Image (cartoon, rainbow, N blue to C red):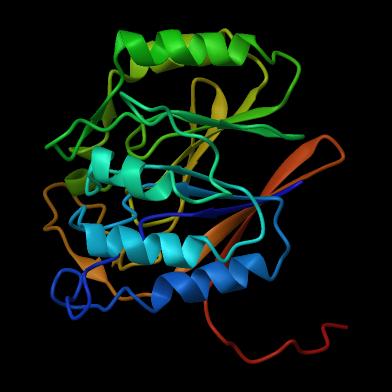
Length: 263
């Protein structure tokens, strides 16, 4: 099974630059097209589909995502509007079903199961795990104990060392860790939000954040560093399940020289 993982496109209304520096409109379809060229069985999108949660940007997202031939699992981020996201993306015929009310949790079935957990706090940039989240997640995981599973959030429930984004991580992480500890079939914890690829562990499992198709956060690890972004190439992840093992590949977006003979 091949799963393309994109994050943080931050689509803006026509003529509007993201953070006044970048037109994100062409970067997302380029990333989608490159991801689609691998023939994924599933595309997952870990939030911040739009920058302002506006109808125009959601319409563009639907137009672009609707061209994919495979199922899509998408959850909102802190820049999304939950109801606008629900109303617009629910129209996509290839979208994994979203609930009619409440948080936009979703589950994609397959050789590897992906469980999307909506931990956004409306009007805030951080995320938070509530008792209702873990109750739902516990039930969903208990329903398929033998299926390898990835749990995906927008805000990571762990720190990255980049202080100015760690302040806006997902809190209540101990509640989430307790659930994951009870379910050994959870093989990865996935997130977005950080606009960088990071790899660590959470609740004893590999945990990572996907790069953005918008700008990247500057890698500033000094305490008290000023927030900054960098216009690096867009990138995405490919999660490859084969032979009972999940391998994740980092893929920058672009037309680069090659391929050249390697041997």
